[in-house]
Image (tube, rainbow, N blue to C red):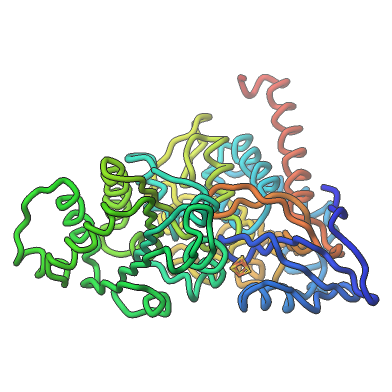
Length: 452
Ligand code: SF4
């Protein structure tokens, strides 16, 4: 992939990259001005505290680009060995993908297809339940641009963007003056529903603390109120932690809104009920469209996790947890999700791309991953790259590598890198692996071992 230079200039000895894109969180802010000196970012104008730290602390790792069993090796040798590990496996696993470009994600899915792998992304450990709910209920949605220009009621449910997505309020949701909300914050009502008073709750007009693990009950209370079905006063208060009058007040606001939006986070998707919670929220949003315009959006964490969902969906029909072992995709979270495939000791080889399961998977999953040959690609050294059979240190997407990332509202954003890296991109490595796998597959087809 060639580097973009159309928005670069030089000022006072510094290279200025305008409209650079921050890939630290799902907001994927594409208005950052980077000041670069000697392959080091010294300033990131407009970035929030998290984005500034992402850019300014970026260091190119002074390590070999490839290590095989801990010893430095050439990238070519690494690609050959990685392809062999994956091609010879009976149940290979490919996992990660949320912190790289869509271009690399596409190649990773192609490799999974060629070798009949089990393919999973980090969505399975964050918004996986929402991915399942989308398949079952569908999603009434819109872009963040529409929220900015139209939304007059904004609800955050189990999500704390003030800390996790610091520019969410100012760039997309609460503060901006929009076409149909010219007064900005004054024209909008903000409601936060959470189990504790977060930093986001302090910025809200209405905060509704609910009983932990009772999101499902609260959502179904609202669905009942939307349909004007009578509910039991005492049971509502007992189950949700709030009296019916609070939920009725919220429903009145929702019905009175001209354009309402619910942003939901892992406080909803990863607590008791999981995909049933997400389904209830999607169904409530759909119900509300009988009264007014209402949409919902998951607040996504990793920079390009939305891209991973999109690319895996284009290629297989499903967003994560897909098994291609039979030559066609099968979707079954809980069976084909990486943590389960590893904990059940099913995978006999793996490739981990831009993720660190050795640091955050369960102990049985980590122990199994350690016991099988696997390939890791990451810009940094991590517990996963340290234990890998073949470890590639790769250039960082968005800082050293151009390409595409999806914002949390499924809008693709181009990346403008600041400077080159001495390390190859994961795209180059993955293409090398794909070429070898294709070649071996074609040879086997010619020899009659495989039918096409
Ligand atoms: S809000 Fe997210 S994408 Fe935007 S600058 Fe901050 S960390 Fe980067």
